[in-house]
Length: 227
Image (cartoon, rainbow, N blue to C red; front, side, top):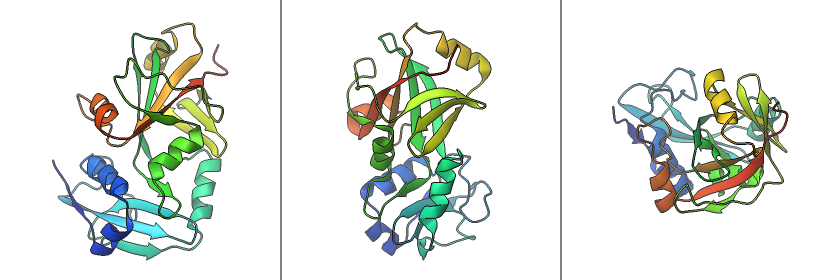
């Protein structure tokens, strides 16, 4: 079901087009948690809500009956987000593993759902910079991003861990899928790609479309700790 995104005028004025485009891309997915009650947003509409303090801005979705679209002051928000990162809880994302015929064959796709950044910044670009990713475009078989010096992939109890200076994010993966992915080639590297509206929960996904039409970032990450 296509879900309407409710955006108050003051929210539209504050948010970059990048924020709104990302929200439009994920608003109809079935597992967006409400920022207030934490239950899934399953109705006909969802509110775009902005929480802010003097250091950061958090953009989330909410049930319209829980919270109207608007901008809400939340002192100490940056400390809460720092705690999420250092605890390994991380930020809400859609993720997927993939492969391609060219080396590195292993692919990791990450699509942000919780948009957190400094005021006036692009949250997805901030996320990419934190991991040492660079802008990329073109067919997935041809992108060749440099090795990141800021992040790597390591084992995690839920699948794969993406380790970076702020903490560890995880990619939840079934053992069978992970085993096949790790066995793709001898090279201990993988390409991690993030961008706007990758459509990871759709079939087919929108990855190729995103690489051709929307900003994307990628990096080659080393695999550490895998036997």
